Figure 1 (cartoon, one colour):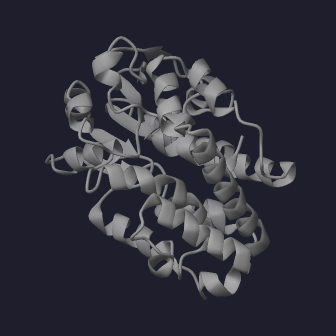
Figure 2 (cartoon, rainbow, N blue to C red; figure 1 turned 135 degrees about the vertical axis):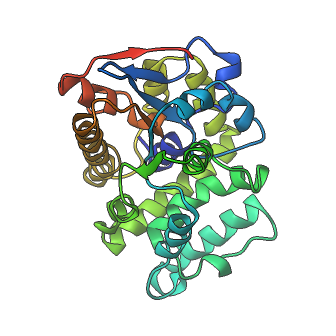
Length: 298
């Protein structure tokens, strides 16, 4: 899978209109137990339809004593996240000249007012992650992502736990294991993909959205893996392992610990739908641990 599509799958594969258009198959599972808990596939981006799409899910969020997103979504953590994207030195010093110029040109294509100046002190991997998402963010400025809405809702309820399955450091630490040369390869791959899809006039978010609207994890996975890899195989495998397998295992362990320690408490776990499917996905990890999961429609 190309790096860009993997990142989009993890951040934007959930359709904001899902609950309205495909109400029989939201990505929602009940974890059976003395008191039921829930796993819900979310979207990490937002648009004006998100609140409407969440209307049928929020009562279920309200009914649970504890709500967990991938990382805490409080304002303090979000501010720290923005700061953690910054590194030492400047991109103009770390990037080959041709790649630096290509990144600047990509920003201009997204919006003529953009330049690399605000991104100059970013980590290389952070720029690679940010570029594919900027255009979508310009379309929906200031909109909250589904995860943030869920977390804020829980945080505002007296006596309800609102927390993360990972720490911010654990999530961002996924990228810090890669060398400067590997991060440069990631950025080059991202720019290649941006240029290719623009040339082909394809919209990867829309394609993933349609796969998601099918209500089938299998179809979603097929769309995610439709693209041949532009990263060299050893690096591609390491990226996939770090972004998916390792994080899924860590989040699954946390979920199991929470469920085991408080079997009489109802938990609501909201994670990107890209983490749910496959033999190393969260659903499979929970089933391997002996939990029975039932897909439901609220």
